[in-house]
Image 1 (tube, rainbow, N blue to C red):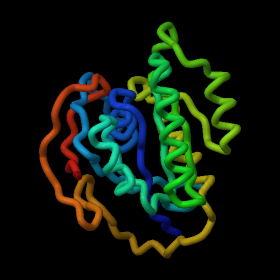
Image 2 (image 1 turned 90 degrees about the horizontal axis):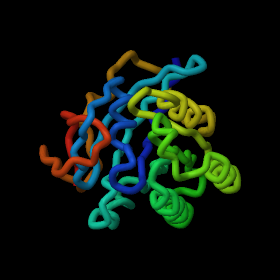
Image 3 (image 1 turned 45 degrees about the vertical axis):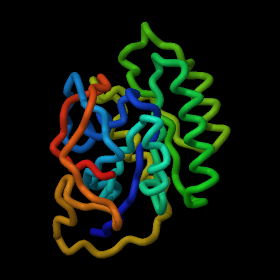
Length: 212
C-alpha cells in the first residue's frame, strides 16, 4: 500500500480548541481542561483512505501572542494547515483570517488550508455565522468545516478532506513499519520540554512532547 507523509500544522488563537482537535483525532479522547501549549506540540496519526496510507505529522502551535514569532518554524514546509476559530468567540474569526494571510505570504504556495469553526456543539452561544465563514473559505479556496472536539463531529472528516486535496504524488511503497511514535519526533533545531502552563479550557493533558 502506498504511503504519504504529511506535515500539517494547526494555527489559531489560544483557547479555540486546537489541542483538543488533535487529541480527539489522534487518540479519540476529550478532556475538559487542556493546558495551554508552549511553543508547539507534536503528534502523529496514520490514516488509511482510498487504499492509500497517510501519515499525518501534526504540529499543534501555541495561540498566545508571545509565541507567534515561532509559528514559521512549524508551518515552513507544511503540506497542509488547519486554521481554527471558536464559533462562540467572534474575535477568533478575524484572528484566523490573519493566520491565513500569513500562510498565503510565507508558506508553500501549494499548501492545503482548512478553516475549522470549532465548538459547534455550543450552537446556542454562536457568534460567528456559518454562512459568513463558509463564504470566506470558498473565496480563498480553502476547505471549510465546523468541528466539535467534545462530540467528535467532523474531526476525522477534516483530516480526510485534506488528504484527498493533496497532490496524488510522493507516495512510497509501505514496508509495514511504524514510522513514528506519538510525540517522539521533532524538527531540526528544536528542543523538547515536558512542561505546559495554564488551562485553555479545550481538553485534557497530553503526554506528547512539547516543542519550542
